[in-house]
Structure formats: C-alpha cells, structure tokens
Image (cartoon, rainbow, N blue to C red; front, side):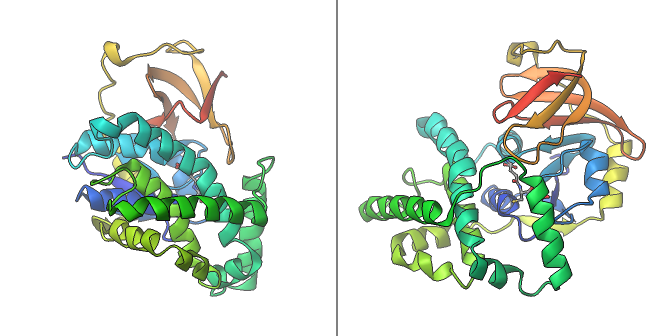
Length: 309
Ligand SMILES: N[C@@H](CCC(=O)N[C@@H](CS)C(=O)NCC(=O)O)C(=O)O
C-alpha cells in the first residue's frame, strides 16, 4: 500500500470530500496541514504553481483536483467502489456538475454576510480582511453566484432530493454511496459550518439524514506530517510508472514538449514542465524544484487546459 499524503486544511469543502472518501475506503494517510490562503511556499514547491486545496502526494507524484484524487484512491483501494458499474458514468457526471455548480451555490449561500461572520468570526479582523482579498484575486474573472440565485437553486434541488428519499434509498443513487454523494455533500457541509445560516437546511429532513450517513464514513486514519517532511519524501521518493500505452490518448501538445497546465475556472495559476504522459483523463507534467527535486504533477483533463510553453 503506497503512503498517501493529503495536503489540506480543516475548513476546505473539497478537502472534506476527500477526507470522507478516505473514510469510506478505510484508508490510513499522512495529513499535512496547509495554509488556507497564499503564501503557500511548501504547496508550490510540490505543485509548481497550483495552489488549490486539497492535493495528494504519493512519493514524488503530486495529484491535483479532487476528481483525479478520487480516481487514484479508487485504483489504490477498489472496494467499496465510488463508481459502481451500474452508475459509473452517471455518478461521475453528477459529481462533476456538483463540484462546479452545486459548490458555487453552496459558497454563494454560506458566504452571505451572517454566514461569513459565523464561520470566520473567531479569526482576527486582519486575517478576515486578508482572506477576503486573497479570494478576490483567486476568483478574479470567475462569475460569483448571487445569493438569490444560490438560494433558488439549492431550494429547488434539495426539494427534489427530499422527495426522492421518500423511497427510503440511503444514498443518492440507491443502496450504496458513489462519488456523487461526496460531491453533493461537501457544499452542504460548508453551509452547516456557517452556523448563522445553517438552519436553512432543516427544511429538508431526509436530506439531513442522508448527510449524517455520509458524515458517518468519517475521515479514515490520518497521522500528522510536517510539510517539510512531505517535501523531503518527494525529494527522495520515486514517481509511479506511467500508464500503459493502451491507456494513452493524444491531445493538443506532443509528449516530451514543454507545456503549461492550468484550471479553466478559477485559481488559474499555470504549472510549467515537460509533458510526460497524456492519458484518457489525465495529464502528467514533470518538473524540477530546488527543494522537492523532480516530481510528476498530475491533472485531470476535464476542467483544465494545456498549452505549449
Ligand atoms: N476543482 C477543484 C477545486 C478545489 C478548490 O476550489 N479548493 C478551494 C478550497 S475548498 C481552494 O483551493 N481555495 C483556495 C485555497 O485554498 O487556496 C478540486 O476538485 O479539487
């Protein structure tokens, strides 16, 4: 079993998605606590520019984006599956929709002024102001979902889930949890943490019970690790063997060329390096860092762009 290192912070909804998947799969992992805003020098040493949370590290391989991290965890521990054959496509596509639009609605709702104060009230005024500035720059150019739009979307879809749960299914797609449950859960978890506005969710009690079932998966078995130790592990570790030819899917840039890869939605800081593999839904970029040594940074293709450098 490879040693899994999760770089994350407590308040991050996407990190909560992965912590719960680690619990669902009953996996142990090393837990590195990262800052919730820039500067993040130890994260950047590993990724080369990608600053979003969480990231996952195995030796000298760094995996960006929870969609890819979930696929890698499935490879490591196939059972219980996040993508059971009967729902494999539906669950993945629902999860992708939720990570984009349901997340935007969850943040739009939770971050209304009272929600923001209840979630971040324990931080100093300076920390709160710095956080607001950090997120403005992070989301520059990305549309923000207005509160009334977020409230309308959440209310409509939560009502639909509530009615569907009347058939007593325990999870969104039936008897077992899938990736869709984790992706629909984490934006609602974010709302729960904004205690001043969390009462909104009580209108949908069956959804609340489903949330308890998902939360009950827990967070797996973390043991703490310093970020400097994670960098040392990357420096002396090995990268995983690249996937077989049969799994490869040529894209716009030739393997071996210098490229940049960046998210297409927000936090669009590019990572530069040599493209070493193009898989069906994964790009692998090799880069060398003065502290972390030579690493392979992995991205999903969906939601990311690649350009010749
Ligand atoms: N599509 C990405 C989204 C990740 C994301 O937006 N993470 C948030 C935290 S929940 C983030 O990085 N915020 C800025 C930061 O933490 O620096 C994924 O699935 O991993």
